[in-house]
Amino acid sequence: MDLTFTNWPVVDRSIWTVATIGIAYGLGLVLNLLVIRQVNRLAKRTAGGWDDAIAKELRRWIPSWSVLIGLRVALGYWPLESRWAAIGANLIVA
Image (cartoon, rainbow, N blue to C red; front, side):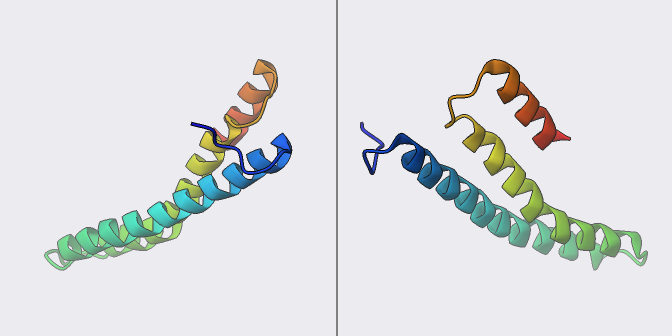
């Protein structure tokens, strides 16, 4: 299966990179809705405020984490030397 759209490899890699990051972000939003719904349901059963803080932080960070996962996957689309690919992966993880 040929996954090229144009005759320019850089443009094709850019399209796949943007698509991967966009899909990862969308999946992160869906996951965020599902996780926050469950955390809020559990939070209603408790009297403490710690679970509300967890829900707030998860709501804030899940989409960001999904974008980072998308970046990590998209890093594989580019022909990088193994050293630079490892540096990029380590930066994303950090």
